[in-house]
Length: 490
Image (tube, rainbow, N blue to C red; front, side):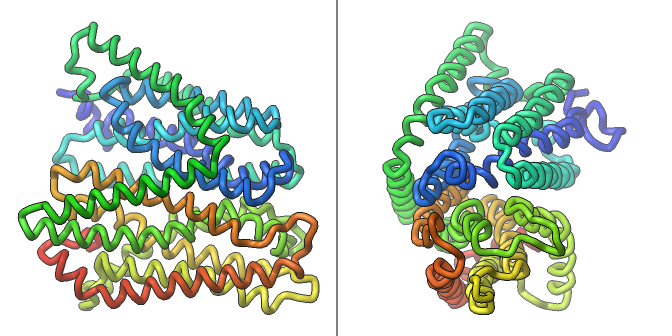
């Protein structure tokens, strides 16, 4: 009996439970940085809002872009559990350096943290999927629990970050982030044997090759930290490079699609490319949350609710709660609608997600219009905006990953999954640029910046709605291109 199936009688394979708790605490540190970086850079280190937004855009691009690289390293040069723990150690070191509260420490701290978080996310997924035999139908349930653990980690991270942010206790904030990562390391070490890799390329090498590959993997980690530090220092160049790389990859994928046969697979790849462009618009607006939208919330939203001071990070928990609670409800609702004859498929969900995030932008100018003479916008408007954005995420995010297995030919599935993740990275850089269009809040007030914010939110909202209409008009074509593929959302 293999290790993957040694605990069948207990409901889940050995190690799955540990990975659930590891996921919670591994996510906590990232949630802290994701929700606080722009505020920390502007309020404590004296960065301009434009510089902070650009750096946050590059932060997101590296985080998502390195996932693919981590998937290649794990199981080939370092075991997934080794790479995960080393990544956690780098995150702890990065947060510790950040707690020193200096500009130089910011770059080195982020470089360490990004190397760790970018590489080890894929490791958790790989360790979990290896616990199950290919025919084991409990895999989906395990990943749902894993997804819930990730969102619980975000909730704890956002809540703690907001608490320390209210008093601007940044040193305590970053030490709090290290606590989650340290707990993840401890759990991993306590369950070390249960988290061993199962049938990876590294396990089929000789003892000498094993140590050579391990040394190469360690060398890659060592080189990545200063490389990322250098690129963070030149965030404008790095952002341009990421976008240029995204364009090149997209064009190469277009060329691959044109040359691919059979025709049926070629049509599905064409549908993937169209949907990828639509998703780029969605994720660009969605990634505004820790950037321009965070600064708007900090300076222009009434954060005193029933006498309680609300931290900007706490508002992002709206998204976490909607995903955790709304996911099962939306799946149930879609199931009932499909039984009644409604055709809810990939193209329809993508179109609706764009309308949702477009409306999420458009409600903000309404709130600005109804603001008082001081320009401070009522809290309810940012809540409504986040609710609409979160609904859009529910419509596009799960089905986006699920459709890769349906639309991508087998030999291109890894590449197309990587490209799909790269879309989010490029969108993060673009969100940094879009945030730069928004007014500077330094030496200003809400009444003075409201018109600028309203103009940008209107442009973004109506732009997303226009792309949503285009996607709606393309639904017949997309359905024809996807014809014969089982709907992953059904």
